[in-house]
Image (cartoon, rainbow, N blue to C red; front, top):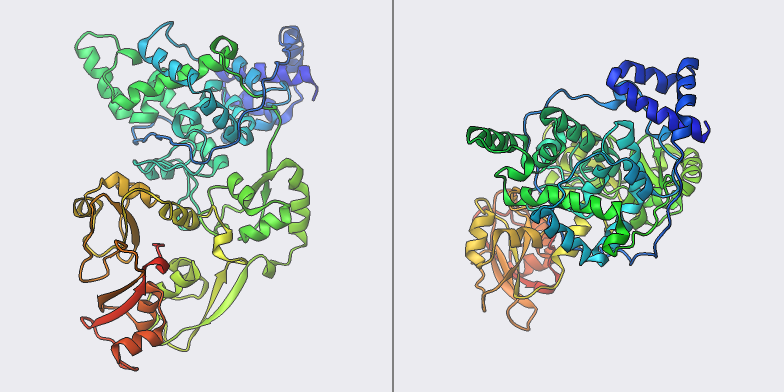
Length: 572
């Protein structure tokens, strides 16, 4: 298809969308209606667009960028219509521009006020933080072409491609205090509502490919509900229920009901102005003294179907990438392998896609994952085995056809999927990112707290004199996340001293020594092996310190342990 046909088709689809989705479907699928192409010919002379000049290269990515992602609340949704129903292929919408910024400018549809203090305040901030814009552009580069394709396929305003800057600074691993994740910052419930799978292996909210489609469906539905993009954006941030209530209050008081006059949460009042400020900067960067590095309007990745579960390290090797590069394009995968139940695809750079497909086709099915045969020891539980091999209990049960968590016995064998490399090599897996965060040096006294039944973020904040959100952030969590007994949390107490409990609920480093003698009360389900694993000591040492030989442990028994506080496991 040549340039004129491509552009004509885009304009025709936009016009015909107002007439009926069925006709869009036909034009997109057949590409061969003589009458339609005749109409395109009449329009062709008005649609020629030139190329843009480019700016200097931006600074390198700063992965420590501080952001304040937004929280989404589920509101009422109008009719949920996806473009998939009409078989519109986003890849038909490309190659007209050499620069995504020109394409974005031409696709803008939203109005913004000529002058408003809130908009000006956000504009001033972006203008005074040009380095921030440069970092964001670097992070956005792999995904902008794809997002614009999806927007054009749905005839949505191109400005929405800038929304991930407001939401997450284009950081796929962003996780907010409100439990929102990914570049579009979906909370769990809204993500599930829009088809984003979330489990131990995979979180679709962080999958840029899947979450972009879900976010645009959500935004489209909100705009259908309010028939106003400013209201729709406010609802995306604060929930449509809050926006409806604000509109109802203003109507009752005979006040204007436009976004700028609504009484909304403080965060939401700044939310729409942030997007409008970004729109103005992209529309005329020279006016604001900002240089937008040229981002070519060409595909940056291809989606490669993998067919079944695949080790991430092996996939990276087959694709000619390092593991970190593959994770950055596929941040939805939490662990060292893809989800055994799908999605079965990976995004890889365009130049690597075909070699990856060829290598994958030559790979024997049994070589996609590594397996280990584990003989169950006396006293071992399924949860201990799952923790040891970094797999989920549900996955272990499914693979080994176990009905319950207790249907195992000593001497029995389990087949367990294991990583092909040491876990620390998968630096951007969920667990390794958490460990890196927990090991970050901060001010105060470092405490490793082992969660027990009844612990909450609030009770721990009172105990250690720190904020609930601080504890959550130090451990890569949100303060509304559920704490699990046995989970380890890192807490940086601001107190001059910290007092450990009589049980190992808190292990505190307040002197220059590294060996501590602690008492531990045996709980139901404990074994010598489990206790030794928890404190990184040898089973034989446990026996020697407590002269217990091979006696069966009973709940309530108090054991003495000598532990090295610098060598404790901090993963939950």
